[in-house]
Length: 479
Length: 112
Image (cartoon, rainbow over all chains, first blue to last red; front, side):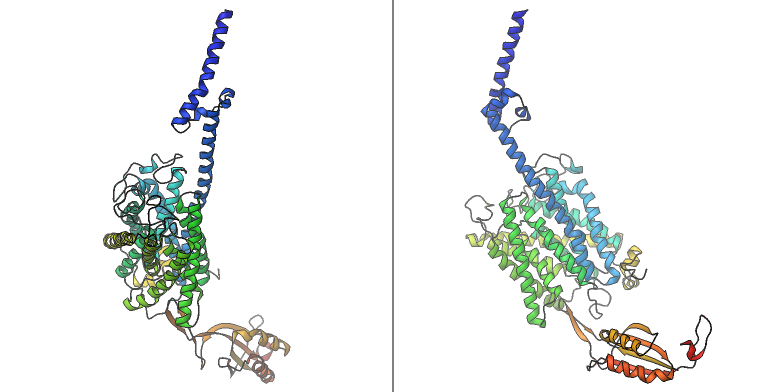
């Protein structure tokens, strides 16, 4: 009996001694398993196990830091739509349409979120087709705590998913700037849902999705540089906005009847929130709390500032005064233009991009709009379409491998690196985004026009969308 | 009894009101109005679109006065509402037939 006990003890000792050896081998071959973290006193004594534990902790610490930053960024980008864009647009319309335009942004926060959970995410980021994603993540199947190494290897895929959702919300919301003050609520919601499925999702997949036709990092045929959404968000929404404005026609009374913004104070608050939220949009597009995020943050800020200055300067020269609306519009134009470039350019090129964008968009909304006479009510095309296009082009000029060696270490990225061919790639991306938005929007408008109709009656338009579409008023000051 | 209507610059209202109280005016009705006489409006520009705003905000004071106070009140308003620029407004006087206090049906000047 005593012999048996001794034999058992010996066996146990051998097993325990072998465990650290096993742990060493497993840690050197692959990512540490959770077993190697078991706090057995013998295991902790092994150097190999300590390394494995350290490795695990470093990974976990990086993941925590990145995850914290990315969750904050997701919230910041949501803030851009509500209240940022809702206030910005809400102040620019006439009093009788304030709630209607705010409601459109808010409804998109709700509707696109639901669509995103069901099929949106997987259409954008599932699969690896050239034009549209697959259905592997339909209903968010398989989207959880594990990272998706193709997109963001250090944060839970759930974080990546919710961050990208916020982009899908603001993009259609931008279009409401062109349809403001005359489009039906029912038509707006139906159009936006279809637009999200048939225009946004394919474009997002083409530019950002694995295997997408225009993807610069994951094997695209025409590698278009678009750090945070110059083509996907701004060109797509801006060009669609122009199509909507042309299809809907002018607001009743435009341009004879004065239609001044009813509260530039609201617009001012909204624009400042957009500026702050844009840090989440652009710096967050680094998808990690990295030095690239810092670089994108700085570029974003400098471009916004420069564009506010150049729009104001243009106005000052033209009208003899710099207006508040001009300054905030310029800042937004600069933010739009730096969006594709944010993670590719240093601060000095960012200043140049901002300066060009501010003056260019000023010219677009004052001169070009007047020449063609379309009623892009709140200048969604003039700022987002035009700013996004000029930004995407200038990204091809100024992208630098020092900031972001996206094509591999030491390989030239943009024109200033000597890779002028990138401008060609940018042009292809721009053209595809323009064409896709143009055709897609036109077809969808036709369909929605047949189902719900697009435009309110003239009587309803004169009475205002707040009362006729929603049965309420923005300001009951005497109540 | 005379009815006095004065259209004045909103910025002068506080001075006018204080001065009228000093000369013993106890009641008035004030309305925010818009209009213009010889004063031209101004131009506002929103993203390149120009709007001419020619109806400017003014205040309209209305009061019905016993005859003995009319001259004092007119003088007071002239003195305090004047900035010397176009757009200072106007005073209109008209005769009033009757005044009736609703609470106790008092009539005439004692109802004022």
